[in-house]
Image 1 (cartoon, rainbow, N blue to C red):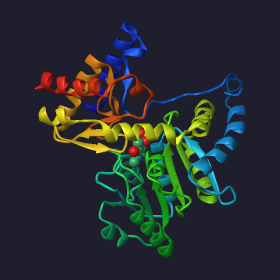
Image 2: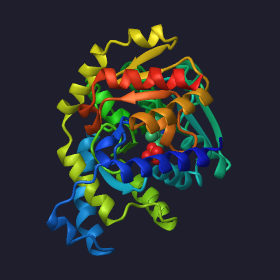
Image 3: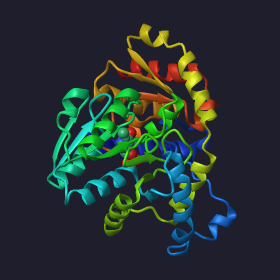
Length: 354
Ligand SMILES: *Cc1c(COP(=O)(O)O)cnc(C)c1O
């Protein structure tokens, strides 16, 4: 099945459930639920020129703080997606830099990074081996570090600090892709990216927090100006409604909500999955099934949606997103269903598939 066909099929099933039973029968367990909190007073400002005038300043303040930066040296701006922020960064830096070196806690990387490098004819090297990647870093490279992968595998703090330090010695710009990592790392007491010396960091306000799908980019002022200008040329910058929802999500973000998901993930008993022939790994805020083929994951995910109303990234995710079947307890929908409901949905969808 092509990626677009899968997405359309998923949307069709969601439409059917919403029309026949209503939103309450949908359980979004992707960990990306696209929260959109705006107040009546915000509504008046959702205009093309008025909105960004007000919201850019507010986003700057809360955005810098989310990454542990300082208003005297850093700036923060909003993009439509994390992928758009990554694209704009690589586009803006491609004039001076020819090679991107990327460390991922576990391969593969998010596709937005290699795809952007490809467009600008940059050499691209990715690795989960620390020494191998350090050897490639010099003053001519942009170094990207993924804080946590799509499957929520987190970087080790010593590795993160060592790479940043090495980049400083070698004069390489260092950019942390902290899409989910900004909050996952915080949950494990790791410091935010700008606080430990990254030049740039990006995060998704949709991941492990109740914000819109958008990319918050922060870092050294002169770099941000250059990257944001480039993004404006291609229409990648977030507009007033998104900026506003990003600000509210960042202001309302509470680590305690994540701690509940962490506890649930830690305590959930998954032995019946093993009895049903499935292998799993726990993630900080949920779990993933690891022993099936991409096609099997997709078939099971579509059945889970159709018969149990459970949305996973496997079913609805963007092209190139990881296909492993991942369950995340961060979203508000997760609170409305039991562990048994989720486990039964997986097992029955698997048995019904094979
Ligand atoms: C999710 C993710 C992205 C892209 O986020 P989008 O909102 O889909 O553009 C980039 N990098 C990593 C590590 C991610 O997990």
